[in-house]
Image (tube, rainbow over all chains, first blue to last red):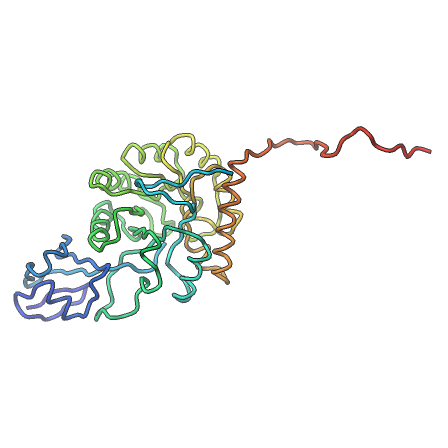
Length: 66
Length: 260
């Protein structure tokens, strides 16, 4: 299935969890947050939330700013 | 001289200077500038990670045990975007203190006051310590306070402009209009601008570009630290009144007679 991660389409296994997606993309967990289809996903839910075709995932962390 | 601490969301801060993490030429220079500034609160933006996600992070150069991070909602043009960004920041573990920006215009980066008030209400209700970046309008400042803001942060001049405190009279009226801390956010160009904000009686100054964009960011950070301290001390000391004509500093009596 195809999902969008930070605005880029990627092909992943159907039923991939947020937890597995972060591992796949080698994303550090500390100070990172995830939103799926505009809703923030709790860290405690990463392993339970399964992604679906067309889901829009945002993965963010602190960057330089004022 | 005895001074109180800056209190935001129940936390006390000795430093009245808040600094950013944007636009530094290198991350080690940013780290050294933070050190030189004496700041205890450091602003960060919340942005997409670059993927794959194993790259360098600004947090490798910020001691998060020592500094309080202040995530901002820069780049948000609606209350909804800003609110969601704050939820993301909280889930990321950045705490519940947020620098709330709802921008109304790309060229000036002036705030959208309606969106700002709406987001302040929602976030304050959700338990955030809301620090809203606003224009220098005393009516808006009062409305933000009533909406639950932990402080108000009027701009001195447009973000990144370095124009200084363009309307000190409005800042003074804001200081008389609200009881929450007043922190000048944006517009500072050099040390005297920061000192002026503090001499007016502001509780703090927030700046990024004035330090990060200086030719020597680390020494400018120290200049800002001294300026904020000097301005605060001058304010607390009670300055003399302004007069149009001279008042002699030396006694008029006891002058020698030089007439021949």
